[in-house]
Length: 228
Image: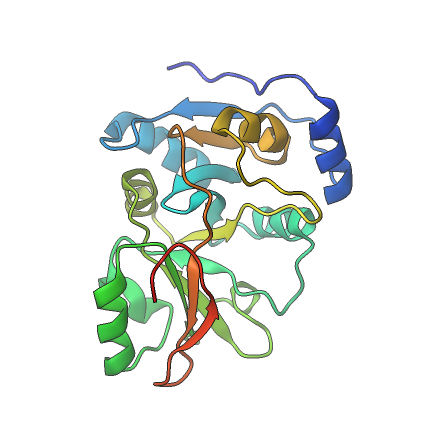
């Protein structure tokens, strides 16, 4: 499917972009991918774009999210500007499954069993980051990182196709309520902030449940879509 540009500006989009403090005039590529059976050639195109430096908007089991390659510092800085994030924020690594978790985070046996019982699913786990993880990717003070194994074929396929970790951040704009929007409305509002839109159709916008696992006593930080 040929790429298409995002729709023209709307008053609401302009308000959102001005509130975010950044407007990018670049054209945005859009790939429409089957949400349950992602086409391999389109996933390859998406992965090539992300590895080439693109900041993507892609579907997960808790709505659309920002996604970028771990080595892409500029994309991370763009997300920080759009979301007005500080050094206390935990960015999250998307994992195909839990087998790769030791590369990014330290996890005890009890916490691993808990994660295994809840994944794949709409959960974000906050864990101690490994020393191998670049400092800019984890919480500066607590040296922690988010880990996610989403229950969504496109997200998992994209993470599997990349040659480095897929970083992710929730699609949140300060002072703007994006809940309840159809995906076309969402693309219309957010498209100019990203280089690539991976269109997987409707995606529920309930946030993930966030569980802190810095000790062997799980700490619920946010009750979201996942039951805990």
